[in-house]
Length: 83
Image: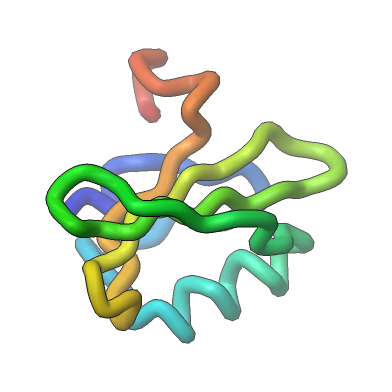
């Protein structure tokens, strides 16, 4: 549960470890991101890709039932301090 450990461009720091999916998606959409695809991920979770015209892609991981957003990050920035 690491939603609060990553900084997403265009969005203020998320302080919760997880968020209900509807709340997370509302934040993403208000920042101008749009959901472009989803696929199975490790541990029966769901990976959702988000696109923004200005910032790099975001990958988000949801619970298997897609009711909770567990984490989200810019994969290109993974490993850089602060991400």
